[in-house]
Amino acid sequence: MDDCLIYSGGSTPAAEYACSILRQSGLEISTHLSRQVTHLLLDVPGFRDDGFLRSGEPPEPLLSTLPTDITICGGKLDQPCLQTYRTWDFLKDETYLAQNAYITAECVLDVILPRFSGLLCGCPILLIGWGRIGKCLSRMLQSIGAEVTVAARNPKDRAMLRALGFGIAGTDLSPSALSGFRILINTVPSPILSREQTTFCREDCLLVELASQPGLAGDNIISARGLPGIHRPEASGELIARTLLDHMNKEELS
Image (cartoon, rainbow, N blue to C red; front, side, top):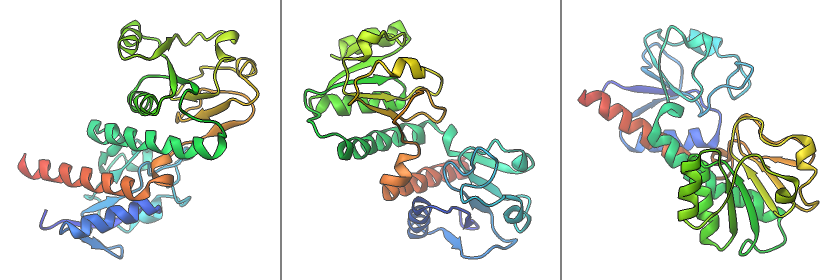
């Protein structure tokens, strides 16, 4: 990594923290664009749905000032403008995804608590999906005494959930089932509950959407995407930096 020169194309506090840690670890961070840059570090994710950078700028002016043999690091890098570049995507790294899921789960409490006047201990909560975030969040909520029910499609997942002491449900939730929860959190990135279905939730039920592709439809949905960078930018930046360092070390050893 001695000849590594990183330029940050990130626009978030997490990107700033990441560069600070990389600098402390001995890597050189360039403060200006040049042909000597070996790595471009973007945000995670680095692109919006419209193909623009997360900052709102088009990527082409930035790319045109950098060498064509750079390695671009970031998230959501399956972009047409990057087809001729070497890329490394954090969102395809299992270690990053697992640790980011825990940070996300902790951030969910920041979203819920200011909006909820009751106690989480004893609170009936429905969590839809038992992927990485669902696993972290369900255990976190259970540890503070919440009555957590997890909706999962897979029978094996439901069997494990029962063994771990969670309430279990399928994803074909009935109106009577929905009406029993004070908080409903979706982690599944596909349509799960229609507008008609969410009307069966209690009037005071918090509906929280965590998925990148919304699974909840209706009024008063709390959209909570990209939580680590918003609520825990230091932790998010440290995770980006440590993951990148691990990747670079593995590349050197291979």
